[in-house]
Amino acid sequence: MSPSSHRMPLIDAFKGIASQLIVLHHLSAYGPMPLAAQAVLPGTLGWLYEYARMAVQVFLVIGGFLAARALSDNGQALTRSPLALIWKRYLRLAIPYLAAIGLAIIGAAIADHWMDDEAIPDRATLAQWLAHAFLLQGLLGYDSLSAGVWYIAIDFQLFALMAILLWLGRVRYLAPALVLLVAISSLFWFNRDADWDNWALYFFGSYGLGAAAWWASSRKQMSAWLGVIATIAIAALVLDFRLRIALALAVALVLGFSRRSGLLERWPDAKPLAFLGQISYSVFLVHFPICLIANALFANLGFTSPTAAVFGLFLAWTASIAGGTLFYRWIESPVASQRITGALGWLFDKGLELGHKVPGLASLLARRA
Image (cartoon, rainbow, N blue to C red; front, side, top):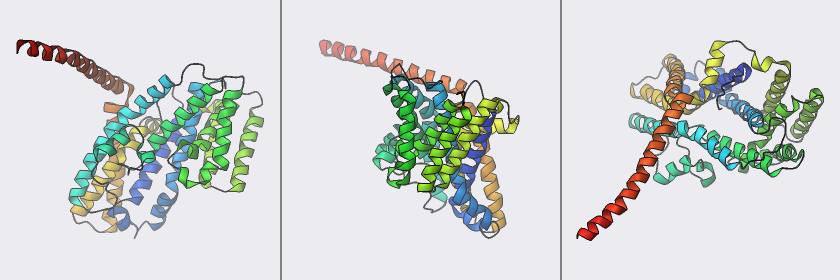
């Protein structure tokens, strides 16, 4: 979900639409408003609850596609240590993510004051917050402080795993082969076992399809390479059909053919979709506390009618886009991120200075005594 100075309209469109589907999925799943709205929109809310969550596959494929572009443009090995790249990825994700976790804690506290609903996370503990800060909440068994934040941890794991695989394969053609081998293992084994769903290996099949689409689109026999990719994925679907993997394959093939044809960088020419794609990560981060507060207001004001519920859901959806826009401007955008990073660096330097001064001051006081 990272932005690029050289934007790709098709990817922006995919991200913009996918992020909105995830928002609508959560609006259909949590709180009293979707329950009340079921009376007039049973089919729509049922579809959003059941299928809109699969939009995560779009982000997984795009993540692999862009990771291949950044780490191994031509399928070459990663020659430098991956640690600096992994740290940079963590900072890119974590600065807006930690700000959003703060908003989620505040939103949950407000919602808990106004309504009693199982969707409201329990009050955060220090250990739970630290687990979230290091993107380990799923692995350590802590409940999420906000809906959807599991994906941020998985995105980080996927990038780190791919960087390490590309670094380990420092022999001709071995680097992409390692990535594709792990992706195939995911498609045929790990992704079929839900016990792995807190680990990157569960999702690496979709991520690897995105990476394979990038590499295949630069080969002379692109259609043949994409055909091999499709054949492997279809074989995995024959073994165990999963709609999410079928969607991931479709997105990967579209990205591969679009890059080769040039559509990736020139279509669709639609400013609203470009804008929604640009703020998609921010919308993804802030929409859940907005959803909770909207439902809490609905309950606290005593609304029960389906019409009021539908209107409330629409307002919550609109507020999520508005909140994501503000969050992007103040927290996630490159300018805002640099400002925050600079401020954190300044605080760190001042802390070091103070740490050097305090021992000296302590020894001075000891001599005077």
